[in-house]
Image 1 (tube, rainbow over the protein chains, first blue to last red):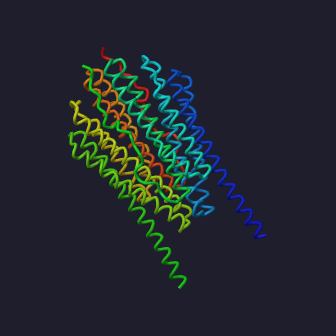
Image 2: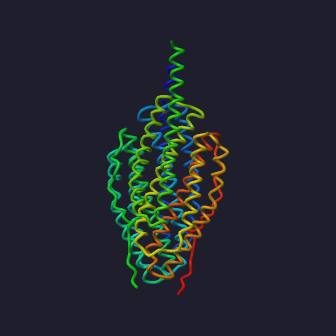
Image 3: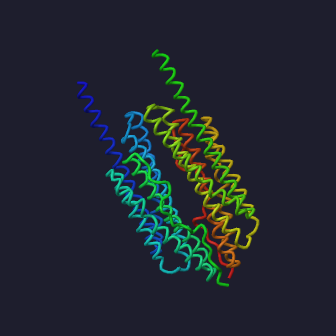
Length: 240
Length: 240
């Protein structure tokens, strides 16, 4: 009887962990889609899609609360140690990161609505490239978590530099648009913040990868990762 | 003998929790100072102080790692439940929030260095007011955590609206400076991001307050707090 109970406990514990993995995967999928749709809405000037993105953010917030409550219950009831404990702590951190990514996507979508009402500014190709990169990093980071794949996590962790480089390019481009014509200022300012949102989403993907590395291996990655965002020091000379 | 051991275990556990509170308090103090100094550096065009803020951020990052490792050890060794478990989870979330606040302060300091090299733009009074408000909220939120004071946490939680209002004012002011003279664009853009950093710091203070409420009371605050940041939809007409 005792043996049966233990077996039952063991089975239902691994069941709990599987459920946790699935929830994080679902949350990750939602977040990816929000990022993709926000940038599609921006590039196509599709205010309807942008409004959908704004509305759908509540689903990610709700999932975050669910995952957090579930993790705390697991900690209290299962008293996990070792890799299980690290995985649950990682899940807590990752679901918080995904909630933040959702917020950035929602903010980008709000700005897409304003930008659609302003005169168009260039091709916005950089935004699509940036979005595709951060989405791929986000997907790989979540896959790494779900599959305990530290090697994949390390790849994502080292991969953020191109995102920062596109961001720096967009930053300078937008400042130049502003210098050229004051009528560009409203759109270019909001686009600057959209680019910043995408850059932050990329940072969160990197952080998720760092968390996965820790969860699987039990040690930390070096403190400084390759970082090429120097936009905080960017100066563009006015044309006048 | 067994009794003595238990007493010892109990004493050293509460000792651990006391140490955790102190670390969070120290981290909070550092973060507050970073915010204050970053904005002082900006307003006084003091690039030396700004450089100090940039350098000092590493201390907050190191503390975050320390607190996180300590929390995970506590979870593994003490197997806490109930309010202790909630407090440790809260400490994990809060130390992560403080690390983010440190990053925003560092970014603001970097931008202060660039802004100091550009032609001055108005009085920057709004930045000082905003900084004072978010600092006060941050201090109160950390005090609430350290003293298990849910009522104080709820006050902070409801208090973010004036910060958002100043932010909206700065957003419009900066866009107007840009429209007036293209030579203002570099400084005004960096100032926009500094204002955004302060607004995000304010959000983090609010989130810390929310976490404290949960840690003390065991329930959550309503999902939507009063929120007045509408800058994502701001439009300023060009002067031309």
